[in-house]
Length: 258
Ligand SMILES: Nc1ncnc2c1ncn2[C@@H]1O[C@H](COP(=O)(O)OP(=O)(O)OP(=O)(O)O)[C@@H](O)[C@H]1O
Image (cartoon, helix red, strand yellow):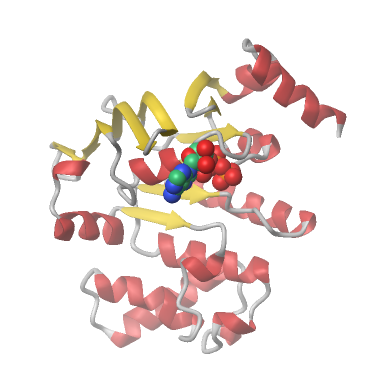
């Protein structure tokens, strides 16, 4: 791993009026590292993810990102065009509901190709062959390249969304409950695929999940949130095998009993 963090999150808090979304969260993320944010519904996971990925402005705090040119930039001080360019090139965002991350009325190939065009690729043949390659990588039959995602199953849509996000070679991918809402067998296949891709591409990722099995399988480190705060943070195996906080112990034991 590199000696410089990719992301430095400093004291990020978000309040919705009087209500706490998340409070004084700080951590660093390293290139190639996968961090899971876990916790019950309402604990602040999505708020934190949205703040870090600049989809939401925090009330206080800063997030610095290590740009490709080697400089750190405060994400909240970037202008809209700079942020959008980062989102299109260096970042991916995989939504729980694929319809939020795909264009449902254009073809699968166009969904993947569109991101390439957004980063300046204009050669139709290249775009098409890269799209074919990516469909294969996410295990979608290339014969379905001209079909719209409306015609795909939930698992296929999610795999297509992943292809669309990864085609531009991002360094950091945000995932919000990527396997939520899928059947258990479909989840298992998707998790295997995500794990392989993240590993092969050396991606850094921040994954929000309420499912500790997802955290176990995908992440190196995890943060446990409760009432908007991070109450435990450590290597995933350590946190799950030897939780220090009573609340984490409860979370882990409730899963084991299922
Ligand atoms: N737009 C909003 N306006 C007001 N309060 C909000 C808003 N979004 C979230 N909250 C509140 O912030 C807190 C954290 O919510 P958040 O959605 O971040 O939690 P979560 O852990 O992601 O939950 P879930 O797993 O259900 O999505 C909750 O108390 C929630 O009610």
